[in-house]
Picture 1 (cartoon, rainbow, N blue to C red):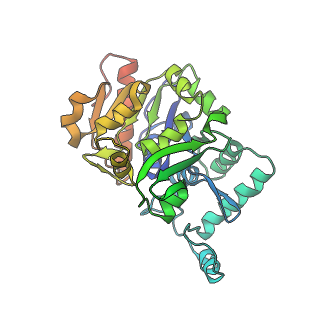
Picture 2 (cartoon, helix red, strand yellow):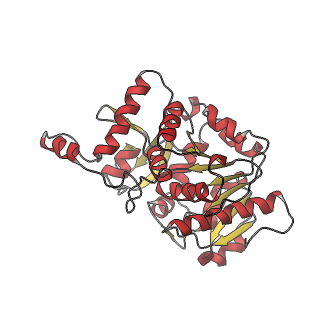
Picture 3 (cartoon, helix red, strand yellow):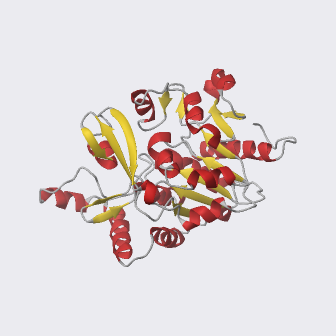
Length: 326
């Protein structure tokens, strides 16, 4: 692995397993201390008296090399004594907390209760895990994704985990977003004059990226950023690699296609990375394109997609000959 030269920091917007995969690719091909990952916190919730932050924790575990290799979330080599004991007491077990994972939730809940910010906590844990990239929440204020379905309004984790995304989605809202502030660390990362690129990871646009964009000033910070904003398609053909992106798009009235994702982001993005199997859609995307195989099953794949996104950003910053294929 060789680090790409960069003339400034790179910011990634990320949520979920797909986002964490590309964040790891960026972390591996860039100088590691040049990356900031702004992570969705709309999935956060309180469960069994503990503050759970699934997307932040997935990012931590992934960049630290601790993530479960098959699931993509949770810790590798996890044990489940706590859940078995909880089940024996007749308590709720639909949201599974492994023993090692539980330690992170307990410590976070304890430190937040002492008025430590979520940003400060995640930064401290990242350093403890040897992560040199900055992992920051989109906001230190609570924003909660609410899903309007045929079963009524549901909290995100109830919809996503307990009901396994089965109810049809009619609309989404982001409770608390209007009163939330962009975290100072996220705002500082986007406001750097030497910023090289902003990469919108192939996370679910509606469930993982839209909560980030719902925080007031986030869109204006992105539009004013001194770097191209590049989105990576989460779709290959009419399918999402992981998660309910395609299902939700159909239920919300969108055509399931990469072009719809680019249209959804609209004038927020300056470039788009399209899977090479969707080449026939290229003429319908209204921003400059890079094409590559976006399926990320291993580390070389994650690095390949990261390099394609960064190469497009370089090409847009400097219209001269691009470094490497775009």
